[in-house]
Amino acid sequence: MITIKTSREIELLRQAGKIVGDTHHFLEPYLKPGITTKELDLLAEDYIRKQNATPSFKGLYGFPGSVCISVNEEVVHGIPGNRKLKEGDIVSIDIGACYKGYHGDSAWSYPVGKVNSEKAYLLEHTEKALMEGLMVIHDGCRVGDIGYAVSKYAEAHNLGVVKELVGHGVGSSVHEEPDVPNYGKPHTGPILKAGMVIAVEPMLNLGTANVFILDDDWTIVTADDKPSAHFEHTVLVTEDGYEILTKR
Ligand code: MG
Ligand code: MG
Image (cartoon, rainbow, N blue to C red; front, top):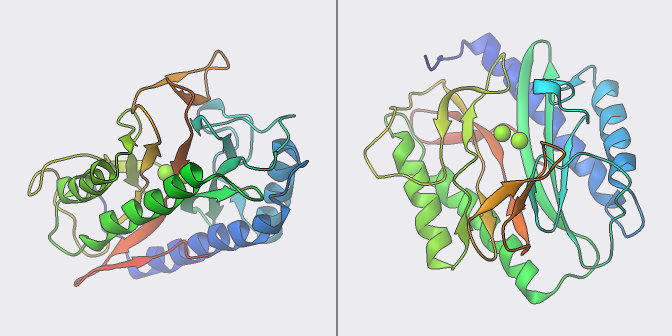
């Protein structure tokens, strides 16, 4: 069932989303060559806890980190560890925070120092694909409209759309119904109503759309080792559009 949130729940989701956006803003200056992904994870966790919130992903399905940090060919679910960021990397940071029982979820991909033109292209157009997906949202739209908008934009820009992982509803659980795939047909799928909250999160690859999972059972990587980017916002569906809850 896709729940319609009460005004009290929406207020808590706004606060959780703000904490997630603020955590991104807080981390961004640290994304420099030489820092390890574990150091970033600790900084994020400390910041989230100082906002009286908890990291949503810590222990979720057994995930060992507080946030997911995926570098270059890593698509999502990178485990924070000893990997050091290098000049020219791109790093995707997926942050979830739970505030008074409600979650926010937002991923963003960042350049580390100066990146090559291919990576800059991937970042620019994955962010734009997210915005294309958001723009079709309003009371009465259907989940397939979002996926269609994202994949149409991605394909027009020759980017591979990862299909194994999808967006989702957000509420008192970080992953709720419905699934929100980054592909689909217009006018198909569940109908979205004002008061529903969903995360839209395109994962786009510079090369093949194919991915596989590493031996750590978490990290998803591209099959051809080319870079991948991930942009995600949690949004509230409104009568005439949407409200981004995880603004940075
Ligand atoms: Mg996320
Ligand atoms: Mg998500």
